[in-house]
Each structure stands twice: as C-alpha cells, then as structure tokens.
Image (cartoon, rainbow, N blue to C red; front, top):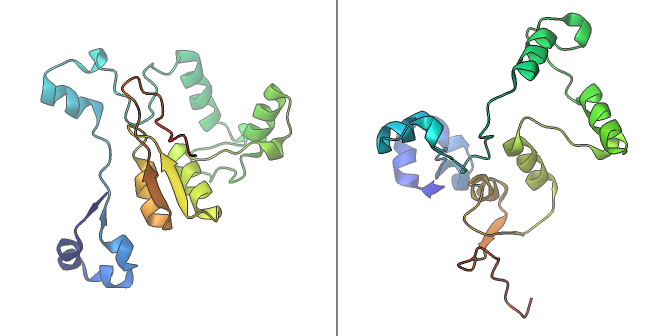
Length: 166
C-alpha cells in the first residue's frame, strides 16, 4: 500500500467522492508467476512462489472434471449462468459433516481476501498484529477498515519476536 494523494487526485474526478484515506491508497497486487519467470529467466515450473497463498500443485484431473460437470448441470444447484448460493448451503453442510460440526460453524467465501475483508470489517478492533513477511492483504485491508497494523518482527529463525512484557 502506497500513499500518493496528489497523483491520484489528478487521475480521476470521481476520487473527490471517496474517503480521503482510501483515495490515496494504491493497491499493489502480487506479480503473476509468468511475469516473474520472464524477469528472472527461470522456468515457471521451477519457481515456488509463496507470496499469494496459491497452491503450488495443479488441480487434480478428477476435481477439474467434477467442477466442470457441476457447472454444466442445473441439478447440481450450480451453474455458470446462475448466481451461486450466497450462503454456500450445500458446501458448508458437506464441510461440517466431514469435520463433525454444524454448518453454522463453517465460514466460506471467495478466497482468503474475501474472508479476511469480512472479518476485518465486522470486528470492532483498533489494532491488528502481523509478523512480516506475511500475506500482503493484511496491510491493505487494515488501511481500508481503519485498523492500525502493528508489525512485530521475526527472529532470524522466523520465530515471532514477542517482547517479554506482553
């Protein structure tokens, strides 16, 4: 997250309607693997990129087929041309059954960004502690939700450096 208020003010007249603290934010998304591969001259399949919480392994063929079949079938309750169930009823029930809990104990969303955004918006918190290096969305979402992000450094062995008085 970078602050550049004077630059952004000239970009769009729409920004005058946006909260000043948000209008000055610039989101820097993670760089795609293929771009990094080209920049450093290493094949994409030889790079373990960990900054976006992405799975390093390909989607299993069986899973891809099941998803494709479900998207082509109205009977599955899922279809590419119909909005999905916003409460993910069947999905949460299946996860709950798998873990022996009730569906109301399962939270589902559109990826970690979505779930973190929801959590940070509904909590009445003034501060959030992070330990870099970590997921970049914490800082960005902290700025959007006006939650102060406190960075606690790690030791060389990556253990969290928590002061003893805490």
